[in-house]
Image (cartoon, rainbow, N blue to C red; front, side):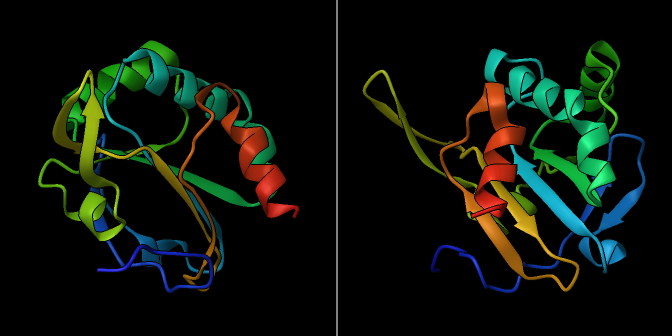
Length: 154
């Protein structure tokens, strides 16, 4: 299956949020969605990325963005992560990796010379019509908001 790119139709998805609510991409028709995939709650890189988005959340929502994070962690793990870091956005629990795979955010990784399957840190910006406006494969976890906005302003 080919990688998703700018101009492609974003795959439809339904996920379960940290509070057990069903969330669909189609629910955000007419709004721009920042859909970011991250490996694990409360790890250094994932925390830096989430906190950067949190610290810029007012600016992002003021520009009309909806922020949604996706990882294979459980709802309970997401609730702790949100509580610990005061995260104001939706985190979807994708334990079955359905959304991760649809967005090519699950695949082979290498660490310390060993290959394994895992979450590929990626961000998609999806317009109000469900079309991908931008894809970020090399995420700057400490300054992700700037990275997103700069890419969109090109």
